[in-house]
Length: 206
Ligand code: AP5
Image (cartoon, rainbow, N blue to C red; front, side, top):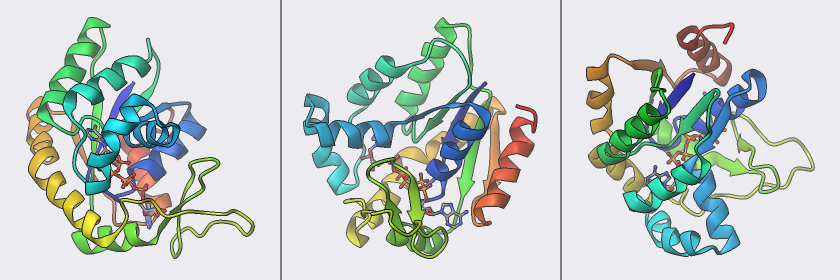
């Protein structure tokens, strides 16, 4: 089963994908996580991507597509989290899957208001050792776990990420709606309830 998690920054895509990977055996492919890893390691991709990420802009399609080609699993249950983000990326994903006799099964659109997005992103903290995502109010890290704030979770960058989402990524809603595979998720609910909505879409026994 191939899932695409679509939605604005901070809507909870990563939180839910991490849990589905752990409990249901999905391979979790997050282009954001892969890019942050490349930046941290100082690879050529990381050096090119950093300036875009720091501004809250999209990394160019050719770099993202090359990255996805590297990590594309041959088969199995996969969640693409934060990819595709442009029509070009979506068309490329469709082509890649077609060559393998596969297709996107469900696109889960995480819906959340701008106000809630800002609250979630400004309170987000990450455990740099495991990559696990926390929130100072909604999901505080356990005692003893040292957490950091993401560079792009600053107010001016958050604003730009929202603008970029609306202009460049939101057109994917129509793209997938036309294919009849878009499923809406009310991402304003607590983590547990969002998880249940996802299981309803993909099937509890998945
Ligand atoms: P990326 O890392 O993908 O960021 P994003 O899409 O902006 O998504 P986030 O990771 O910010 O949010 P999320 O929806 O995963 O929410 P989370 O679960 O953390 O991309 C970063 C950058 O990389 C981009 O700006 C771009 O430059 C580049 N990039 C990446 N992919 C690209 C691509 N395909 N093409 C081009 N460029 C690309 O939750 C947020 C917070 O809320 C957390 O604190 C969490 O604990 C809390 N929370 C989660 N769910 C709930 C809930 N139900 N109730 C209360 N709190 C909750």
